Image (cartoon, rainbow, N blue to C red; front, side):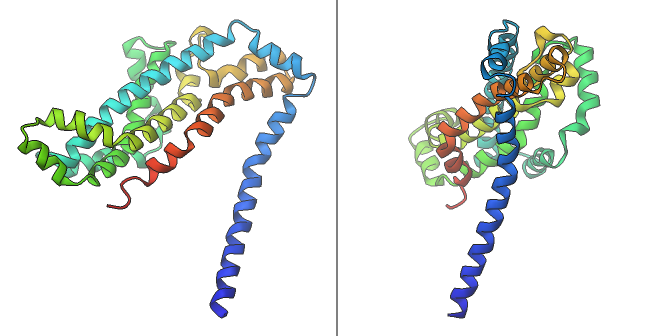
Length: 263
């Protein structure tokens, strides 16, 4: 009976904490939605979606996100397979060096990144964001997909080798299909990170024609002044793809994050 009361108390405390956290998370979102209606719903959203220049922001973000996903998935799947199933010198130290990247905040690399981008002549080019995004996404993706590959029975690998399959064939025909839950999760997180990035576009991109969606509110700050209705409408426009991705891909996120946790 005492343990039942303790369990009930524990669950109650956890639920209260979750409710408080939910309120703290939802309050800014609800306030942003309400603000977007101030001054007229139609006026605010038409100012965002009927402005021809706005679609350039979205197109730049789509191109950057697509390249980020393609390069990140290519790098982390190949690296995860190598670290999981191949043996080579300095394997563990190299893996640890890559994982350490998760512990260093991206802001710490701003100066070397900017100097490199400037030397390459990519300032005011949306493609300047791809390199830093991919470099920042590799540690998490590598850790997740390698963990999933480690959970695949080695007997499958050995049976395929006996049948004459090369390492490339085993990777392409066995590990990629079986690793789709983890790969989907990394793909979603890569898209979210690319789409939501604000700091790097703010520093690397000054030409409005090269800007990404996270800089869109600045356009309305300049032209709308203190009209928070249009600014909030722009923020809602940026958020719509994020809501859609999470709504339709939630099951992939949950499955991918728990994949490989149990062998």
